Image 1 (cartoon, rainbow, N blue to C red):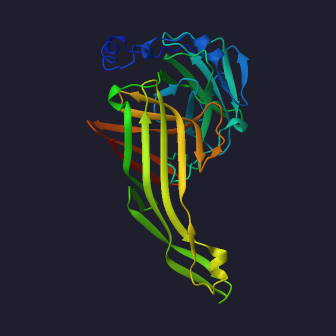
Image 2 (image 1 turned 30 degrees about the vertical axis):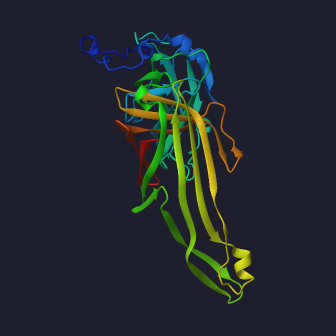
Image 3 (image 1 turned 90 degrees about the vertical axis):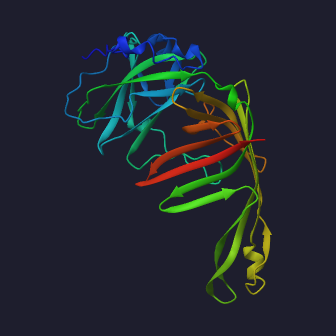
Amino acid sequence: MLTFFIACNKDDDNSSTQNDLSSNPEEEVELNASTVSNGISIDGATREEGTPPQPTGTLPFSLEEDTQSAFLNNGFDISFNAPDNYAGSYIQIVSNDGIPASEYFDVPKTSFKPSNKKPSNHFFAKNLNDNEIEIDVDFGDAIPPGKFCYLICIYDDQSNISEPIEVCVEVEAWGGSSDLVATWEMHKQEEVYDGMTDIKEIDVESCEEYFFFCTATESDTTIENGACKTLKTADLIFNADGTYTFNSTEDGTTVDYEATNNNNCDPIFKDDGETYYSGGNWAYDEEEKRLTLVEFESKEDDFPITIDQDGDLLFDGDITIDGNTFSVFEEDTFQGQTETFKAYFRKK
């Protein structure tokens, strides 16, 4: 058996100045490993006493980062690329002084969280690529802001076990910079995917062709500017208590398929406007210049969208604040393609 007994702060001489920029001192508190382990849940995983089985050293495994953020009442995700014969993971919580919890989690392949992409016209979106595994680690109410670490290794269907990798986590307090507490208007957003750029701007109409099969002529038909949208409002409100709301409205028209077919395929249009609401919590990491939004409720045209009680990670990316404006940037890879998202805000 391998004892996961590795301290996260390996260089105490260099750690004293790393937290000078922190806007939330409570996030620097070192959390007890047992408290964290008792306070988390992983759907489908089993808790096992002791330490994980000893690595065989024959299964390659790597993570892109050795630090990450987590969020109150939400938790964090563990994402990595896995081999085809991947069967599961072992995860054990350790405190910053290296003391492990007395238990570990056995997370089988059946527990993996599926990729969840929001429609691209609904504010921010996030993807996983085809080979990426995402383990959803949920927090209960007992875990406060602070720091801890975990060790993770993977195993395959041939009982090979990788060497463990240590990742240190900072549980972010909600809210952050007072410079963000205001009402902001998103006046422009840009998405680039598969070589195509989609730009939306306030009060600027964008149109697409509309394709359908015309029964009158028994042929495929294309109508220029058959579907048009105009973003009218897109307001993001950051509150001092760490909550946010986002409201957007779009005016639009699109071809009425049935009416057009009944009119010898001369186009007849119908209204196709839309409203969208998102609400949840925000966190600003001043050291990393990073903004995170965790969504707990949303609606499309007043119809609620079902969200897991632990919330959905709506956005986690870079933010640049410049007085009365700010911009955000996020990049993801999906099905071998890199997708970038940028949005620009100004204070109302």
